[in-house]
Length: 93
Image (cartoon, rainbow, N blue to C red):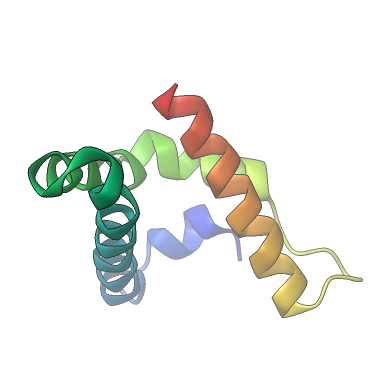
């Protein structure tokens, strides 16, 4: 099942919510030293808004695609993370 199809299910809501909370915390922690606490919180909020946007999620799902037959779960997750990181960089520049 593609990420796009999974996100359309009710089962994805708690997973997506937890993921977005994790993204918010991780981005804020990474940005505090550079931006200060207030700006880091603002930036983290912007990143969460971006990654929860339907258009972003659709593009991410399309870019990731389905797992290949030779790919382990860990390899698929690593590929998905790298794809998301690259997409975020392209959107934030």
